[in-house]
Amino acid sequence: MRRYCLAPPFAPKFISSLPANTRRLISKGNDMTKKLIATVLAASIAVTSISALPAVAKPNDGAKILGGLAALYIISRVIKNNDRGRAAAAPAPVRPIVPNRCLKTFYTPNGAISAYGARCVTKFAPRLSLPQQCKRRINTDYGRRNVYGPYCLRENGYRVAVQ
Image (cartoon, rainbow, N blue to C red; front, side):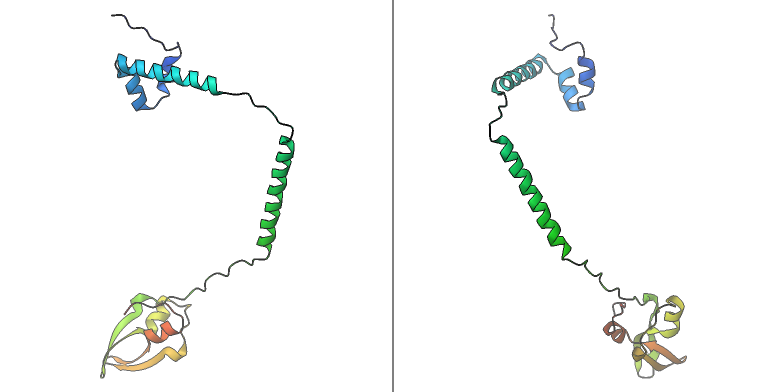
């Protein structure tokens, strides 16, 4: 049985530009698939050529276009005027961070407390100046130490480790 191809001579280039699954359908499809594709293509060309109507300009189309442009101009001016009155939003204040590695447990005669060691904070965050009202002097098994209480630091705007 002899098969007739309806595709034009440039079909190989056209087919290679199609997606892989479409190419597979066209190249490996049976006669029924090819006939279906040809029928759908012919029907779509016929319907689109019948329903196409020529564009006709009406006498008041120019006025409608000018009115639309004027409305767009007015809207753009209103938006620009609204933007002038707004000031830029102020950035959120940056809360200084106390290094987590400085949170230690100190053993005192009254029990264990968690606090930030003053020497550790000055070593790992030299630019960080902690408030003096949070500084406490405690007695430990290794002598007197200066520490900063986490609750006091948090109340004074510092970010501290979760206890």
